[in-house]
Structures are given as structure tokens and as C-alpha cells.
Length: 142
Image (cartoon, rainbow, N blue to C red; front, side):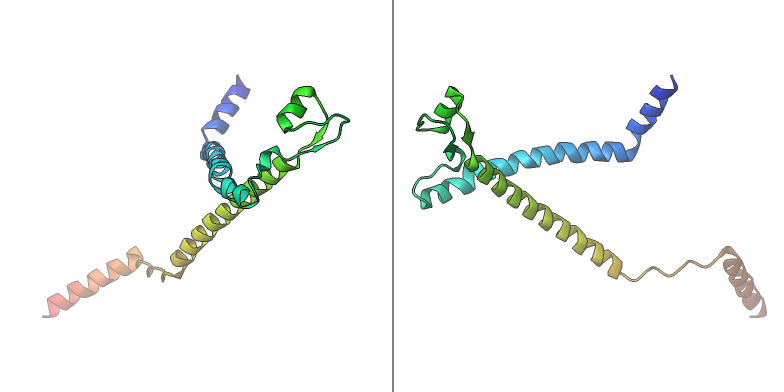
């Protein structure tokens, strides 16, 4: 029973929930970037390079010849899939750049907050009481 209570306290803490939300949003962001790369960025690059499909680039390590990566995989042939690696490398570069821009924006906002002058400290209760007494004495003298 004690372990369940500890787990419940851990799971309900803000940090665990924030981390879970971050992981879920990160996974969705990764899918968006992958789609951006494969559906928007890579087709024009492939077209510029003569219609090359990066995902299908491979080196056949076997004895037989295969026209496509799909054929080689279907035959169970050993292949070096450098096209998939290039695709993943481009995905990573775009994600890293997007995260860099996000962190840069957050840091800029933090600097603006730090640049604001701190609000003057409110006077203590003793000082407020002394001011009230002073004002009361002034009004009695008048």
C-alpha cells in the first residue's frame, strides 16, 4: 500500500505531469518535422539532384543485383541504407534548429523580464503605523 501512495504522489506532482506533456508534444513535433522534411524539403532537393529519392539510396552488400531498396529488403539481401541515414540527419538538423530558435526566443523573453526595474519594497507595518501617527498629529495641530 505504501508503494502505491508514493507512486501516486510522484505521478501527481507537477514535474512528472510537465515532463509527460513535454514528451507528448515533442513526439508530435517530431512527426511534424519529419513530414516537413520528407514531404516539403526533400522533393525539391531530389528534383534539383536529378530526381534522386534519398530514402531509397543504398549500397548492396550481397552478390545479387537489385533495382530498388524494397526489392533488396524483400530478398533479405544485406544493404547499407545511407539514404535513410541522410534523411534522419536532415530531420535532426531541422529539429535542432527549431529548438535553438525556441530556446533563443525564451531567453529573449527572460532577459526582458530581468531588465524591468524591481518594484520598490512596500513599507513595513511599523512604518505604516508611524506614518498614520504622524499624519494624525499633524491634523491635530492644524
